[in-house]
Length: 155
Image: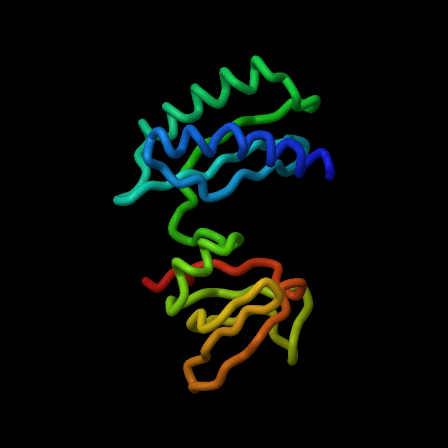
């Protein structure tokens, strides 16, 4: 397991019982480098939407625990927030919740000179994702092809 995966899994293991206690959902935990800074991000949600006070509560508890455990060797910035409207679909529960909804799919490499696709999430499994296009056709992508899949924002 990589350092990133270790940090994410330890943080997730701590947060899961806390989420249950507060009746929140842990959407994702990520440890990423952006520019010269490392970020440890926890995305949380709840029925009706997450509020800033909810994020603050979890952030304080998580920050105190991280200070006690001190298992992250790098200097990092801690962020606890809502996953936002254009949340990425990463886990099985994300796909199950959004099946039948409009999604944006971005590929690592172009397929037929196109990297971005929008359609209705029709099917998924551990290896593939299928979306229905406006013209009634379907297109299936292998999971390794997909750089990002998220809910489409339709304004």
